[in-house]
Length: 116
Image (cartoon, rainbow, N blue to C red; front, side, top):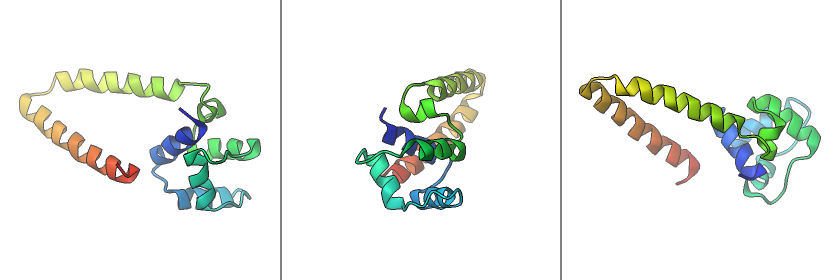
């Protein structure tokens, strides 16, 4: 994934919109607007190294993740999913159906947030 994709994914994982991220950056003396963040996420521009360092602190990721050199976050997510799937296999059929409906609704919310 690109730098912009990684920023977007990390921002969404922190449940922040672009304006909120811009406000958090401003609180750290990085004065940019949400349009700049949009441009990063679209790949039109990239943040400078100092901004990347602060982004990493705010988004709880390391620079290797933002820059696309590290799949640690993806690997952690895969391990989390494996644990959840193992637990899911032990549920009753009615509990599985309940969980399935929760997942379907959450996916709809995520798709809406991502504009899909």
